[in-house]
Image (cartoon, rainbow, N blue to C red):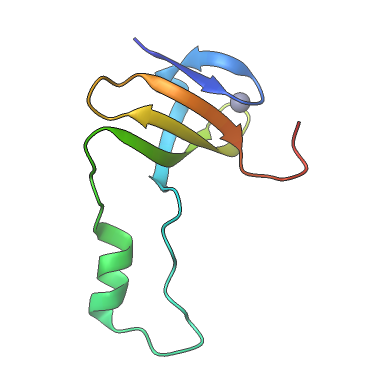
Length: 88
Ligand SMILES: [Zn+2]
C-alpha cells in the first residue's frame, strides 16, 4: 500500500484515488474540425515518461482533482497541489 497526499484531506490509501490524466495535456480546439485520429491521439496516447512526471488525480472520497508530481520509476510522490485557484 502507498499513501497519496490529497491536498484537501491529507495522506490517504492509494486505493482512494483515480488517475485522471497527464497534467498540461491540451484538448483539441473544438471550434475547428478535429479528425478522428486527432481525438484518438488526445484520448489514448500518453507520453509515458520515465522519471519525474506531473499528473492529474482525483481523490474519490472528496471528489477533488489535484496535480501530483511523482517519480514514475521509484513511485515516490514529490508533491501535490489543488487545481482550483480558490482552494487552500
Ligand atoms: Zn481528498
